[in-house]
Length: 366
Image (tube, rainbow, N blue to C red; front, side):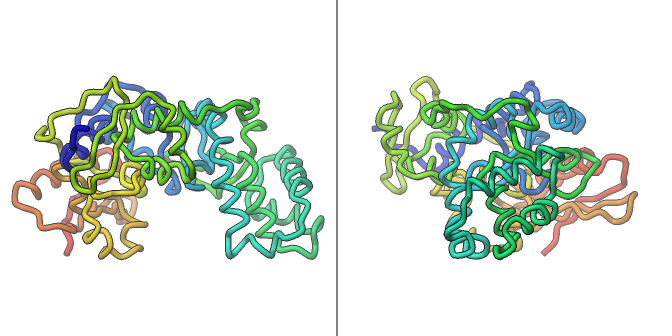
């Protein structure tokens, strides 16, 4: 098997993540190619799409959500993802085991608090409440508490949110708007049930097309699922060896890898971008030693800057009133003068997108 260096893996995945060249594709095409986008921060997918597409405008994604062609709901790793509606209906049943673990192994909401409960009855009650109108978590609690007065209402609502294929409806996630997370089920909101025969084989192939080459452990880390080795074994895949670890990496046999010395542009990624979360071994993006010294609060509240394809800085847009904004960039690695110039240039482009109509500056902070 051919050996792949970290740099080769870096370039290969950047290429299929559409981060070397912005693509002339639609937002819906990008969302489906990426098999969804992390969306705990409601507006982060807008930056993720801007970094990947030639001419992306926020109204395009806002329209997809309002027209019900895309949705935001609990998916891979039991986290909120932006998905095309057809992908949500097809893939959501496959991640059910991860969402069940999120409920029944959760120390705050699960375990003994749900023990002995007729969960089918709870889910029926939750569905009935959302059928009358979409509901916030508080409204679900208020509906469920009188039916199970001896149970913890937040635990009941959490179970409904995770065990049913719920989606957060607009205006949540719409550029320029806001609001509390308000839920409906996919069937109620989209008028279609989730797939009765989803294909995990197809999902693994799509993962490799967007994140490969990758190991079985990488795919499991992305999906939040276990026992995917048997899926890889039955697929027709090309195998490589990770030159650093010796692990076997798999890829689609039809994809040729780019030159590992390919120059790559500076890119700003939003909070939780899946590029940085979808491998068990993240060294192709950032060394473990660097990642481990970052404070958890830093990585949860800031986006990442890639320079030469690797995590080099964190960023955050700080609004200063309605007419001014500062894009704060904090290096996590030493930046050369050329690197700072490149980050500054791309940061100014991001400012013109994310803070349009305001004056602003890119500011490096210690």
